[in-house]
Length: 123
Image (cartoon, rainbow, N blue to C red; front, top):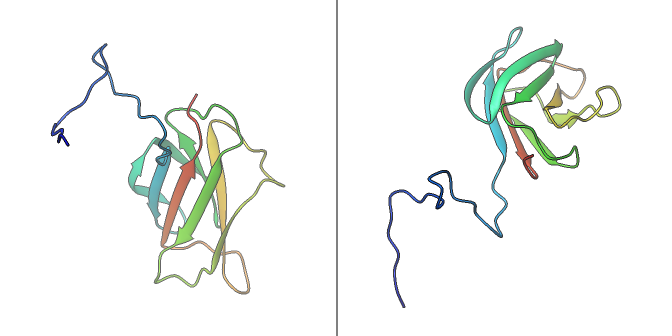
């Protein structure tokens, strides 16, 4: 058995290598703050749009190939928020962004921290 060790792998054209048979996250973000949320850390997120109380749109740097992606969200532990949901009934799914809303047991509320992720195919 051979072992391959490398610090950097590039395509033959010098760009990023294409990984096959893998499905890494195509977008992730940690968003902090109530009122006007801000991105603390992210991958493939160009900006945020604060749509309404507890509703944040993450705008992608690189679009998805279609709107049939799988997204997820999780509030930070110190929050009263118990659930995050996609708002497809209010906001049409797009290849350029995703919208998630946070809820507590009794109301729609902003939260200090939100974790977002997305799996699917880039355009």
